[in-house]
Image (tube, rainbow, N blue to C red):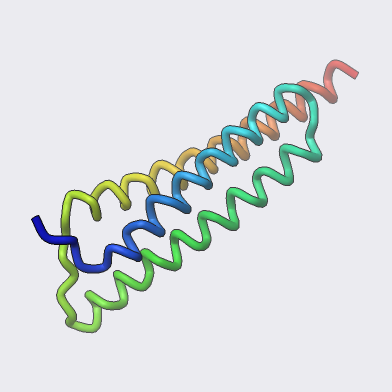
Length: 108
């Protein structure tokens, strides 16, 4: 079995997408504990990881748009799945942190 082309880019999608999702989870947990400074920090870290993953994806899209074939492997699909999950999860985490902040203000 051969190694997929663009393995390094695929691994960036998986690694940074997974990291972004993990940081988003940590942000929600921090907000739940009313540590909103930590939550904001974790959201920023998640966004930074997501930006790295998105840049890797953009490279693949540019490669294909220029007419160069991009091999689609199961690993590539897995990497794209990690990225899309991270994007959705970060959006949700931002909303949840904001909700916890509103609840905290109402209780005060």
